[in-house]
Image 1 (spheres, one colour):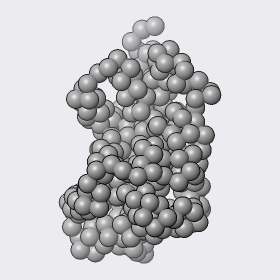
Image 2 (tube, helix red, strand yellow):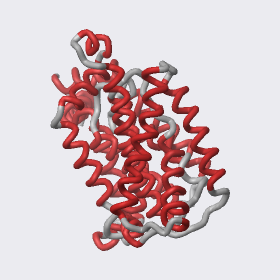
Image 3 (tube, helix red, strand yellow):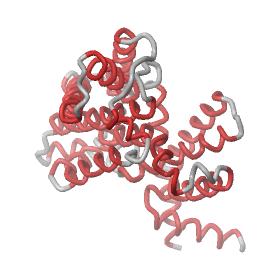
Image 4 (cartoon, rainbow, N blue to C red):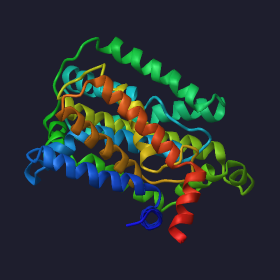
Length: 325
């Protein structure tokens, strides 16, 4: 096969798969490698546990998506620490201290906490007009400090129904989030979020309440991050105040890898999910070969840079031209 034919095929594949095309191709390659290296972990019987291992990162990437789609530089750095805070609140204060184990109480409490966190971030970014990356860096530091103050060291246990999310029920929180997002897509809020991401000035002149919509996007992110915190609790089986922050940058890398424009207005939850799964699969491969955690961080950084480059406008235009010719 000559070089021109290769470029033509690659361009058509990329154009056909859309913004999540690279993540989808990467997923196939990484999955095959993982199955060859560790067939037991990726067998159908172990699928529930494997999804449980990946679920917190998948949900963190999904949670990071709404504010990015809404544009305006909306990157929420507080997602990871907020997951850790929810983990501590649910395990230590609701379950261990208050003796509350019912999902009918814990789930509404988690949703309210998520809405409150999103409202705070949205207010700072949209009303006070602090740069979103600065505003959420502030809440990042606050959540880290509060979490360590509430629980300086790992401890506790989780209710049985949360523990099930690390096993056979691991897909349930992810499906719940997708169900919520499908409902959002059926109402004008979704179109308004995407319009803001495309051009917030044009959205404003067309009558869209920019400030309100952007705050709502942060609140959706808060709720999704709170669910991710519950999934993290399932994975840990306890409360750990130190784990949450590690998910922030990996989630942003997953979002970028999934073809979501960091400028807003382009992308999907499916893309974010594919990006997160890719990072999980890559981490699984590197862990299999006992690669140090420093190399893992370097790999994630390289992925983030490559993903941003591939989603840059000139590169996307070149791929579209290759797909047409």
